[in-house]
Length: 452
Image (cartoon, rainbow, N blue to C red; front, side, top):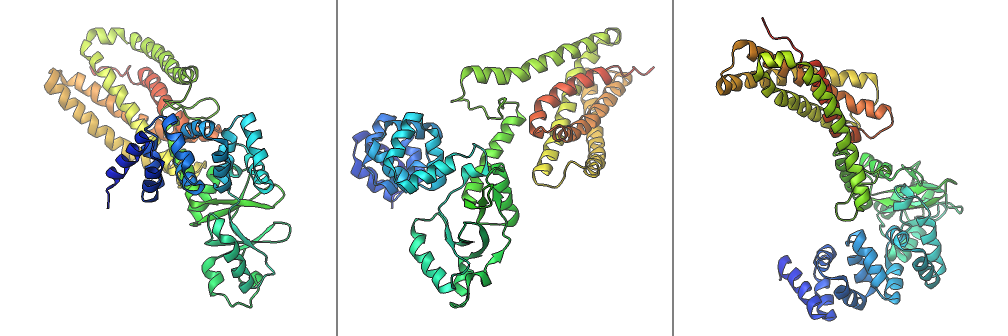
């Protein structure tokens, strides 16, 4: 049996030789994600003829693992019959996403070539805005009627399950497509054949509405340990489901978004910056905002530092400690903010005064202990490296202690402030902690008087 590296090399070799048969053989014994990874390293023009020669099922399994940019390029380059066949076998939610990525003429050409049911399904799901639950909903699920017997429901599942994304949860709908309940395939198999489905189904299931943010569906799946969550529209009719694998993708996107927001690299429309795909103008504008803000705060900081000219001129060595003292406050603040944001994401704390006080009571002794440790360490290192006297050591130690404690408290409180004004806490965390803390530290702790 060939190792993964050997299979990937064989796939790349098949592309270079333009051997569609070899690619199909390797694709049959390699995971689709690995095939997509290998093909993504090759030129689009070289990959297109080989993909077009694959059967639609194999192509669809590989296609979903390409990046969005590669997918768009392939859709433009693949022959029209291959694209039509691809859309016919893809999952409904993935099909809607690809449809939205096409330009208007390409959409019109594609719709005219699809069956009416496929056309209606694509138009319905693609109508929901990006980022909503409806945009990640798939209509490939198994449903039965509440008045069916268990035997009739099982027979219906067998007839219709082949092209569904998941069959482990069966959804019970009435004649008007309103969700009545759910039951697992296991429950259906163990029930008596003569029982009506209405007697064994679970009523009032957990559900999501199509207009909700898509992260809500992922949160429901995680909170209630679901394989999928049903989705209903404004008329309370079920339009599909969001599966656990979709929830994982949503969480991955959310994690990437939080990371981008924490670094101040999110656009005005709350879209993440892509270092390879984002246009220069947007990349420059978004990143420049925080850098300009930091510069403005830096000017204010320098003004406060200059105001201490008399003290600094008397003991010039104090200037050497300004940067580490201010940096320590910023570092402590970033740590606190990260812990609070994590607690908010997990639902451990909310926007309540009780939670704010709990966080302060928890953070204050920890920040004080950390401040004492770094203050003592800074004083010891200053004594041996710079040979300063006790008065300078006391001033430096107290400044380090105060900055660390207050930096931790400011960092812990900023996420609550951000949530209060309706902003993602991560957005204000790293850049604003750096900016506001530098200003505050320079204006509040640097004037600590020298001991007499």
